[in-house]
Structure formats: C-alpha cells, structure tokens
View 1: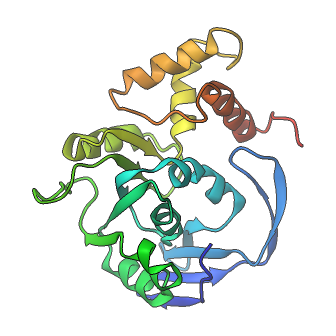
View 2 (view 1 turned 180 degrees about the vertical axis):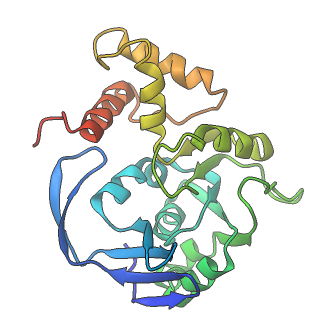
Length: 242
C-alpha cells in the first residue's frame, strides 16, 4: 500500500488515526493503528471519512483489486490506493480514473502515489476530471473491459444501484463491480431467502444479480454465495468471530 503523508487541499485532508477497533468487510474484528484517513469538511466543524486504509475499506475493495482486467475504468479516485493496486495487475493494460473534484486530484498528486509504482504500472493510469455519472469514453479510447465504481460516502446507499446502472449505460463495460455490491445483492436475494443460506440461496443471489441488468463480477467463482452470506452476517454482527 502507498505510504501517505499528512496534508490538506481545500476541503480535503489526509490524517493518520490512532489506535481503534475495526471489523473487516469479510473477516472478523481487529485492532488498527496509525491508519491513513481521507476526510472531507462537512457542516460546521464536522469531518466526514471518505476513505481509509482500514481493514474494512481494504477488504471491501479487494475483489476489484484482484479481478480488474484489460482497460479498467475506476469511478472515484479517493486516496488512489485501489487505482494503484489495479495498475499493478499484469492483467490490466490501462486504467482510466474519473474524478470530479479537482481538490482530490491535487491531493493525490501531492501524495505522489503513482511515483511509488514501477514505471510500467504508473504509465497505465490516466486521470480524468469529470462527473462519473456523466462521463463517456472518448471515441479513441479502447473498449472498457472492467468498470469499478466507488463514488459514495456510505456503503450500500439506496442510490448505488441506479448510479452504477447509469454509469454502465455510458461506459458499456464487459464486466462491472461496485463498492458494497455484496450488501446490495444480498439484500435483494434475502427477499426470496430471508435466512441467507441453504440450497436456494445461490439461486436467489443469481436472480438478484441478473435483475440488475449489469454484467457483474461474481468472485470467488463457485463460492460467491457463501462470500455474500458472510459479508451480510458480519454487517449485522452475527458472523462467528474467528
């Protein structure tokens, strides 16, 4: 992972946290220390956490960082560590990052995240200042193989799925993954299988994915239903702690 210095640009700042408790997206509770955090100034003196290097953040973006391929489009730059890890994949030949906030782009540049990558990985990355909900690939761009979207403050927000569907209508990627996808699909599948388990659960999850109309990444192959069920249980605090 990149080593982030503390700093600020406009309404955004990078800080380091102290010692605290966290729970991974698909693993149990853990202690975190000195984690880098991206904050945005909200109302009054309130600061909102938009991204971090916490176990929850890392695990919730892990599938994108493992399975991106070809020409990958990343909607939302954040701290840029997901982009950096995607660029390191040998299966990826180009990474187009769409970020609408010029201050985020400037803070990313000051942190020199790309400078910490091998030149062969850094040269894959192209930063575009634009709105993820409006951006369309330029005619001269190669077709988009993989779309990863993470533009939201909270995970599994109600507007997530419509937002991703709108992005995909412009991008037409061969495969799509979005932050919190498992929570969104799991919530839909539980309308058919409230327990989130049993032989009908994989079928309910497959139907939920199909209903989105999106070519969604579903990994790990053959075990995605179990993975989603565990993410749901951890979110609700009912998974075994191990």
